[in-house]
Length: 489
Image 1 (cartoon, rainbow, N blue to C red):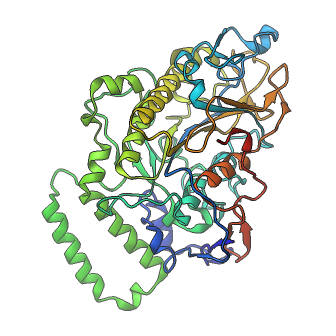
Image 2 (image 1 turned 60 degrees about the vertical axis):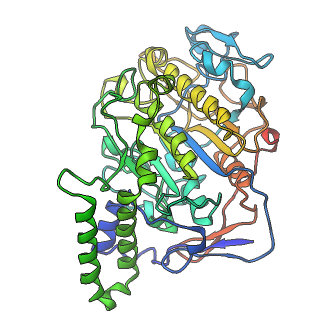
Image 3 (image 1 turned 45 degrees about the vertical axis):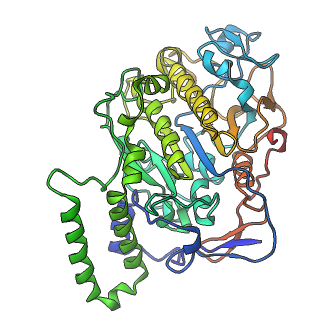
């Protein structure tokens, strides 16, 4: 059994001022090399000879915030009444008997490379991003807390953060200055001013938060066609830009001076919170000076034709960057399709289509997703990476069977889809089935924890792995989840 120890701070103990400041800058967490687990943060120890054979060397997660519709994607109901099926048609895919939404023509031709799970369901119809990204509900504060959410340090860890802490999958970047766990284009909710729950180290500690790049401004139509300028778009971790007056030589001298000053504070440096802060400083320096990392983020090195295939929008370019990062040795990459502003403008609200649902699906949501995932599958296969890279596509919910009076679909968790591809996945499989109305699961129900257990399994994490929370309690990482064996090779 594998045990991973969590942050030792007591639940009722308040955060110090320094820890609060550290949390506010958590988009630059400390890197974890597998050999370095322990000491300052959570430690891992093999308590029994349980072994799971890893199939995936890297994981790419595509997360569509807001709740995608099962009807217009992978579970159309052409025989249902028009008020359920909607105005769109369905088209045949390359898999016999499987039809998909008409605005997914590229993926329709590539369903033989994907495993479709058509029976995900959950109990919370709110934007519980913690539930889908960690397998557990948030401890407190939900997902709609403006500014820093105080519950995040006590939440269950993001599944990518748990993998990072466990050193699974294991990779050794060439220059040692690459993050193991990266999220782009922004921290989830950043442009709206939220710290949405889910993609954090939680009680394992902020050193396991993903490194987050930062781009765009609130209210920009970044995810629509033509939403980004190829010449201007850049992905840079928050706080890791040199600035116009800071050369690498000057940066090195400043770091040397800082090291000298801090060497005079041995007592202070023994503080756990200060050690974490210093480690984050070192990581910022590593990212600034890593040529390999800067090259991976530099999309100008890609042919324009390749960038066009992924789409002239922020999601498409984020997915392309995810492929480049995996090639460069980053094992865990998350690409988000997020909101850019709370507004009455449906173009800014991601997949949360309570109104003008069909306009949004037709004009940017489905075409943008179709191009980005199709291009990713093609590129991973052509580069020989698909067999060792696990691709997961998820959203926190589906949409209602009944179309509302604003031509929208509301939140629905009775059934919704998820996609897998790549390492350890049996391509061309369809698991689970909804009822005739696409409202509830009719066969083989799947919970969010099952999706994540499948990822853990394919990354070689044993089913009896335990992590220890802030109270010192050993908790099963898999929890109620079990791998979906029906989609495994």
